[in-house]
Length: 346
Image (tube, rainbow, N blue to C red):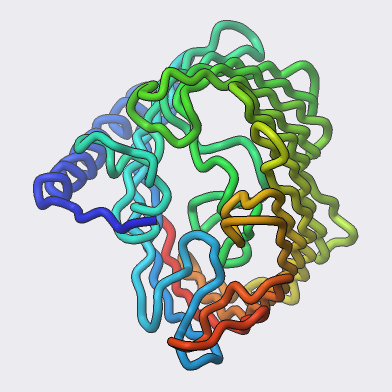
């Protein structure tokens, strides 16, 4: 996941985008004062994150997952989201920059969209039916790109090697209370701007009372994913993610993860992620040839004060092969690492 260099003109465009959003906000508020039934519909939101990471080895190697993989004091990303919600239509323009943002849009090849995390418009066709077209983050998996929306700061293997985003068209149906259906057709996964590979993918999601069954497939690729969770008390939540992906032949990966989270006060919670991940026929997440698996345990604390989040995290990975380069001349089948992250969301 190579880090892309950000040109100054792109930063200027982001600043201009933020200024436009702020300029629209007073006009929206004035309209609200003129008509009490009309709500302010322009919004500016996002997050900024930074972290420190180290491993208890001679070389500060990181687990082979996305985002929290840099050494020492490191940068995550700045994320700006401008959105508009009208009576029947709206849009989302979501831009990112920084190492985490570059990793999130690694499939982008055009100079204009290296920073585009999401860019889509939608229209409500009728009661409970919405059509959306553009680029949007994936519907598969428990975890997401935004660090403010994940409990653990580091990410799982299932999320890191599954899709990040899709460009295409989808239809969302609200079939009943707590029952939904999504059907979509997309370009090649993670290709942001256009269909360069002439590849078409199809996706579907069935939501039932907070549990989601997802499918993505096309041209020799198929992935089935379950994402859900249960409140096991007023302060205890158990999240679940299981997935299986296959390519042509025997190549593919599968995994399962549990996310128990305990809220101890208004400001503090502690969460755990236990993930088992397995790949076959040299899929490439762990090894380039043969089969391999990895079991990881991640313990994360989350202290919140207003919009600020502080997350200390301890992670232990144990693999079936010596895949971790713990020194210039030595590899190991296990790795312990530590992360402290600071996140501000607005």
